Length: 407
Image 1 (cartoon, one colour):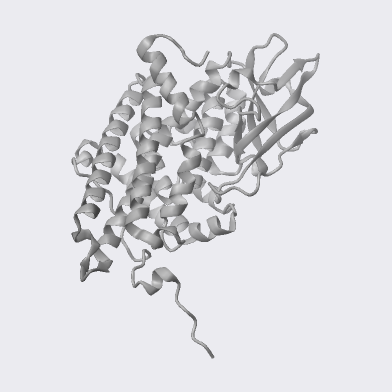
Image 2 (tube, rainbow, N blue to C red; image 1 turned 180 degrees about the vertical axis):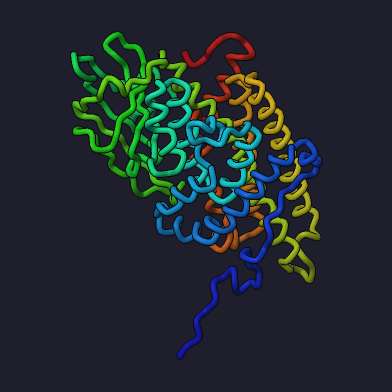
């Protein structure tokens, strides 16, 4: 019988599985963290190593969402970490939340997307804009993962311009009648609850809570993605759905309400991008020290050292941006423009780092034995969703000049 041939990565003698997790901290940013921040980070890091890293490559190759991860996220307190504890949240600060997103996205951007949507785009708007009854009904069950949520804002014809949405509802004596559709919705095919943004008869954007099982709701899955393959994405289709009046989020008032939610999620993305960059950097650094060419490790060559030095520099700058932004968030002083700067630049940084890491690994950079190509493909979505690279640039331009170029 012919012996089984090793995969290319294993044939090279270099593998990733036994490598301990390390975090670049060139400017000793850990000195700025409180003990509870480090405890949260260590807990989530261990979880990712135990529950995500061993399965994520196969899940991505098969384009399957690991549904069992949802309740595990709930068990470790990943859902709603900044929501007050009386509603099932963690009552943590924004540095803790950011570090959680960093570690989860180090594992996979799709896994961080699942947590971001549940925490920042479903639990947050119910907490910020909902009634006490709505908070009590939904938040504790979302926090444990008993319920899965999604956020319905983007439409097929309205991505960067969500204010042009066509989804609408009319009021009757007993309920609201909702019609329209949403596109590119993380968690939609498995969601029990959707926070949906729609226009009323006056054209004012309001938030509604739509539940699985309401007649007229369908949630088809989007297939054939090259990116976020371990995440589940779909549509929300509303056909004369009768939404109870008590499901209106009463404190929502115009486009600023969903954009306030997006600020929460974009903050998490800025931290998560650092986690991706860290994973790519450490993978490339270890590989460069082990890979022998011309009778010495490729880490000995000047161009490889240049790549690694620039990666570390980029990561260090992004870490400092995140820490300062987290402190501003804790003081309720972080602006939309500041969050846009962090989301835009940190994701662009992570893309640069991933591409340079892929170069260092050479052909090994495209195989599933290493995470580089999966991270790189995921980041091509992250750089687009929740505000494209260019839209965030224009948000900054409007802040600088006082002239909004996108209107």
